[in-house]
Image (cartoon, rainbow, N blue to C red):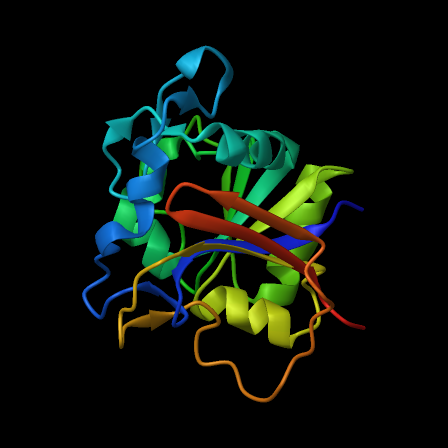
Length: 203
């Protein structure tokens, strides 16, 4: 099975958006460099759902490009799905998306897209790994990501830390309870206006 990696861009005080789901300057580094993340500068979709070409610093590109290419399946919560309308059926990475939701896929929504709606985090990871095979399962941080970590189903935590303090908002780990130990970071890369960190989850 591939590695399950929980990931998001995050403020230094641990928020992925404010109370109104506004990411503020968290994603500015995606568009402030001179190196396309994707070969040939293919169009990708940011979290607003508007088509944009990601261009980052060369240090960030060397980290983000292989990470995105390794992803086979993305796992997201229904809140994020509704917020970005599922990236209009074109996820920023991977070929498949599993949505944790008690509600089914919207009627007639992008039937060509490999999006699967699953009730429960354990079933979601099982389905995501089935699709991903040996490739990585990327889990969006937030409430659902925190639930997947608390269930012991996350192998690594990846954070793109942006130098901004939000003070309040939507937490990277959601409303997770208790302590969860991580190993020392095995990836520490400084980009422009972002610090890329990866930690293995201690078993």
